[in-house]
Length: 394
Image (cartoon, rainbow, N blue to C red):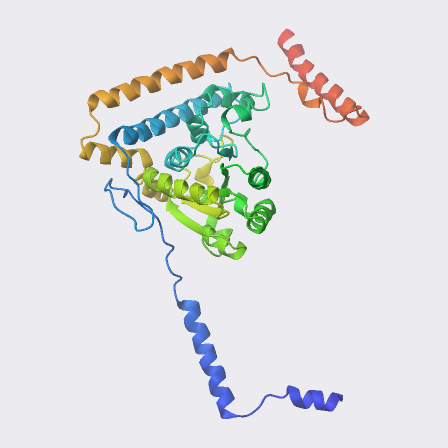
């Protein structure tokens, strides 16, 4: 083909029809740009006002005792979390990642699991740990710096906390693939946040789980903020819709509705157990406190947003429902408060009895045979610590 013929073919045609089609296409494109996207569907069984509603796909029938148990779980979990935050502020812990506001997402999903299911948490799943029977005080050793976890994962089928963002999704997928090969009836659940959904590890876990039809549920607690970055700056679509691109279903549930979370997670885990493969659950909730105790949320979000979500508080919501249905009374509430106080006292006593961490242990096990640079850094740090002792003497 000659240069002349190429140039001739590249000239725009002067057909009126083409111009009309182009104009119509532009109008259609402009109209599409101004059309608001369809609002994501949200599974809800208990409104923020404490009114019980039904959902066509997710039903739940619980006894009064079971409902009271969910309320107790959330209250005790919140109290433990508050004590841990206070202990960090008092210098007893190095750091703490609060779950304040996310109690329903964790208790609802945790109570949906069977004993032989396996959990892969992040570093914020204190409520799930409670549901798995992990002693709350065992969660604090790592944050005090005296151990690397504090519990045997196989005793409760609850893995150690994962600090690296998103990596536990791959661990859960691999474990689920092994469960399937073993012919077990168990399922696996992996917890992560909206920020972790941007990690490549999570995308890889989605790919492998779909290809191998692994019995795993991916449970994303979308608390609206990945430290200081809002969800809308991380994803052009709702997080649960990402699952479709990998070939498995996703669902968004009201993460402040403990009943809806319980129903959805139970259905997702049963789906995995029956050989239907992975599923993504997005619990739409809110982090009422800081990302960790080293964070200041007032620097990146306003009080109006926090007040709006406070009106959707998961504990208040369930309490209102239980009171309206005459399922709880003052005696029950007083007993829960008394149990909360006792647990708080025990947590404070246990933490303060923990030994101070070995400040030089950070240099151990870095290299199998030692390293000159590590030796140099160890000596420098020892001199730095010794300088404080010298100042006290003076």
